[in-house]
Length: 428
Image (cartoon, rainbow, N blue to C red; front, side, top):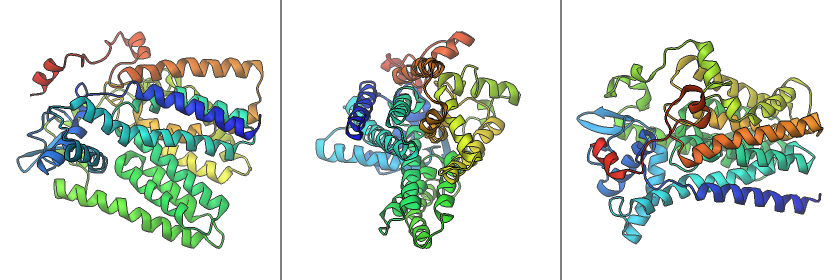
């Protein structure tokens, strides 16, 4: 297969995956506290010029805090503020309002803030895989697995931090990789890497280890241009970090995020935390239980094999693999040991979506090492079948009990968000 044909097939895979996501984009934030909290901030900023949400029709969310008599979203403010720019233009230019044109505003905001960066990320994943694997066919298989079975594909239908953080994380790592390996004279790549790495940890605070790993990857590169690249990286990173702290101060008069102000929550956080043991929790969240990442996205295990193999054994991509391995382990251990509530009612262990994408970067190298025997083909087929089942659940409604969850626990399905009137009444 020549490279031109491979690019065409990759473009087809990306197009079909994004089209599937677009056909399921949500048209209302009702039915989940997570996007409802963000749209409450968006509505308040555009229509009243305030972060306060007590007058918003979406104020009925558990993801809120109370400060000085006002209600605010507990979500980090950067993503909601950037997404509010979309609604601002629609409101001022087209006259759309969330009250009268909810479906149009919500869908277009999600497309601009989530689906577009997600689509670019899929193409960059393809380009990244080509750099890590000399075989175009195996790189195409890796892209197919991510575009069809990675849980972030399903979550891209709604306004949330996980898919956005995954896109930013891959942007940052790809630009850093190009900076380290190609050592270009231009400072554009290290600037993009620093900008995206900093945006990543402001959008998804738990992904901070990924941002630190990208910085260390650039800073420890060596070579004549390493110092300049590091300074450029840091300078660009200061912009989103300054925005994050400025917005957080405007909302809470504190530099600490709302997540660390437990006393501001109207509902005690301990009510959200599951107290089961770590082994049981690991089984259910990471392995083969009702939110099990590996049973829902088994291609992650294939990427994990490639990651460990390249991190431990000498090879061209050993240093890259090591800078991917340790933040993925740190994030996984933190979530398994410190905050056991499965991420709420949702499809799969959504908190590991950004870290799992980094792991899946090593699918193509793993396939190149393992070969393509009959057993490998059966394994890839199983990965596609099980992974697509979870993605289909998330595409239909990410804030529901997935099929695997319902089979194991007998849980009911999705929120009854088709009944908009009753949901609006409840949230009041």
